[in-house]
View 1: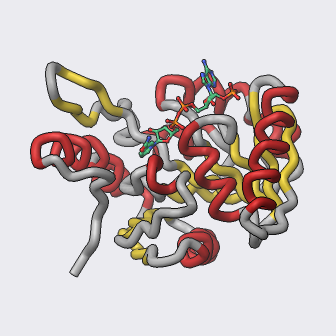
View 2 (view 1 turned 90 degrees about the horizontal axis):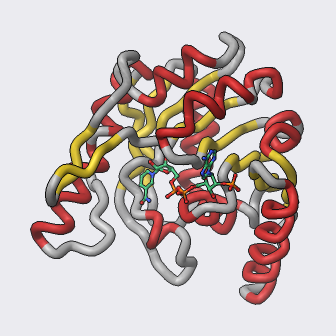
Length: 218
Ligand SMILES: NC(=O)c1ccc[n+]([C@@H]2O[C@H](COP(=O)([O-])OP(=O)(O)OC[C@H]3O[C@@H](n4cnc5c(N)ncnc54)[C@H](OP(=O)(O)O)[C@@H]3O)[C@@H](O)[C@H]2O)c1
């Protein structure tokens, strides 16, 4: 599969690239192709030093999406609406993963602050053509740990979406990461329930001194 990581130059994006590049072709997308090319070369070298042969290239976001089977929107929430609208023409029939969390810091805690559509994932679905299958996932993974290949993550990745095959594809991407388990959380309509766990986990982590807090359903 060809996976475009839009914002693959960022903190979370690099985690997706590192974790999946041994199994899939990765195209890092950026607003600036040169920045993506540099990130691709760096990550290829990091993986090579660990004996992982990876095919990673870097280009602008538009070309990355056009060439892909699956797109990860690894960009901050505040740019999601403009970026998705601007890049709409680049999409055809991809699966789109949204790990995006709309949240606001207030005093010493984080609050979930979704758009009028109800969640970031529903906003993305509304902006993209109906042929695009949006799946929301990976919100409760600590990306500090995700990007560190020495860390064994553990825990569950909650996946919500309306297309069973798209959810299966995303589940298989979760299984690639050692000790992570995918769990089907229902239709995309309930994405707010999953997105809202991120600020909760951040607050729990800070108040209880838990580093890289995640979710595990028992
Ligand atoms: N951090 C976590 O642990 C965590 C947990 C759960 C979910 N998430 C979600 O993961 C997503 C990515 O988070 P992140 O921490 O990786 O973000 P980030 O590092 O701040 O940004 C990711 C990329 O977004 C692009 N970007 C920056 N400013 C932009 C702008 N003005 N317009 C368009 N693109 C811009 C940049 O790529 P280019 O400059 O290359 O274009 C940047 O590398 C977010 O939606 C976040 O809610 C994060």
